Length: 432
Image (cartoon, rainbow, N blue to C red):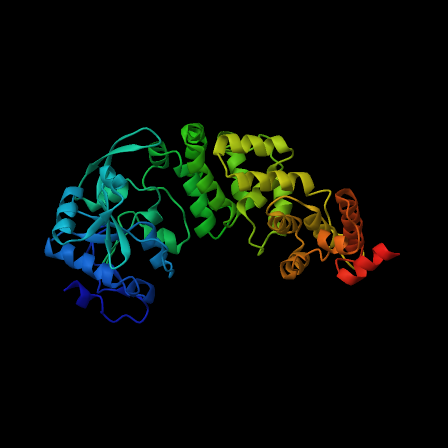
């Protein structure tokens, strides 16, 4: 049984089997037995595997999860591939009383089954029959190599059997070990199948590559020749990839490439983006966990740059507001000279009537590289003004206009004190 085969001993995690002649992608070269791999075998996955084994359908872990497992990481999402067709899977799961959810993926070959409070997304092996640079019409197959051939990057093209056997048709594991990012087959062909793969290339480069400039020249040529194809890709899809690029490694280098390879103009970036400011800000935000928009705003010189980005990428209202805030305040709102350098930021928060001002100020401090002030602000609790209109009425102030004026005066005194004066001290000011 497959469950018994999973328990083969392997101290190093990756078990090399005895040498024998084997062709590319054939099982028998290597078996994975790491703790991260073993942890995948929940009651739900064991039940799924038993169903597929009874029907003699092949089932393997696919794509990004294999890449992560081979890197010693626990994958966030696990996708599965199978030789069973969607109709065969539906019949199998329905007969076993398994609940099926989210049928939107069925026309693309994906069935989602729910077992033991866990969802399993399983896709039939496919061949792209017709592609238009955005979507593909697919045909089902039982050929694992054909399915691997249609995937974008070699490191994403591997499969892993439930017995830990690695199936690698395009040397993805070698590329992963060498931290190389390459397209499967010819780069231009893969890009023309889906132009978003240009950004996926940069995203995974920032995630896996060790050196900032270790690209194959032919890959960069293919990207430049096909950059215009990104004009037909939806802004939402582009923004998902761009955000991940901005939070990965080698950001300065990769964003410069977006400009050098004529990609920037098709994804909403300003034509004359401030690359020098980007260099400065990426150093400032190191280890501070900035939001993607905080990094990206360094390219913007004026508010219109934020507006134009929003028109192309349909960013969220919160992201747009953060970009506009940073463009407006990054120069004028800075730390004070003297014993209270955080004070201008605290005053801004206290005076503001806008939502999420505290969060925006924290992103501004990251942008400016003010790590110590950021920690101080994170520990600071926004104080509550201790005086109310009721307190003033008890002192005999009855006019609404007089109460408003008095409260404003007292708030100014409270602000001058660094927000330390209590109610009694403030009310005593009115008696003088």
